[in-house]
Image (tube, rainbow, N blue to C red):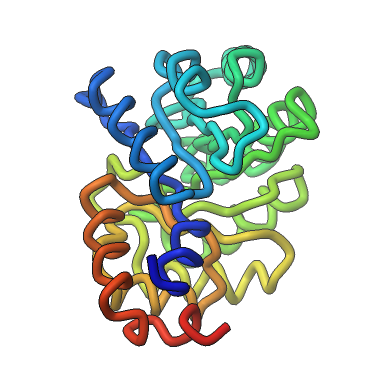
Amino acid sequence: MSIAASRFARLIDLSAVQAVNSERDVREVAAYALERDIIAVHVLPCWVPLLRDLLPKGGSTLVGAPIGFPGGAHVTDIKVAEAVRLVADGAEEVDMVMCIAKALSGDFDYVGADIRAVAEAVAPTPIKVILECHHLDEATIRRCCDVAIDSGTKWIKTATGWAPTGATVANLTIISDQVRGRVGLKAAGGVRTLDDVRAFYRLGVRRFGMSLSSARTLLDRLDTEPEAFPELASA
């Protein structure tokens, strides 16, 4: 494996969070993550116990899962219970869908309280707040970034991967400008090409939610063309 591929693997959240992802898919992403030393694997909540069995405790690949998925409109008590259960099952990261409907209604007090309750319930396990940018205008994205940071998130994430769009240069330019290094940035929802990844990396993204097929394609390319990602090849 090239240096660039090895370093890129440590930026990938390998995701199997579609409704159709089966046990076979979970086993496949876990095996590939171990082979490539990928930083994290994220699966739907029902698969967390299996994934925990497949990935060594204390190993270099983290177990992750989403809550409030995919619409974010679960009541707060349910989100808290879901997050606590996932951590008990072995999750080391929790990606939380914020309450999109409340954000679109301008009720940012609710959005913040919802996030804070989850962050406090699972601390010190880090949470990433998913904005689902496809549904938000620029002003709402900016406001949600500030609310999420003030409420205890460690990362801002663009999308669930279930909406038509998510990780775009336009969205991540807004998020990067608003966040200004206060928390980490995760690009998800349409991260497929090396051009995408390089552009997002230059905007400060340090985690990439990707499907197995996309991760395999990009890592294989960096094995043979490490110069295609000069920031990682020479860092």
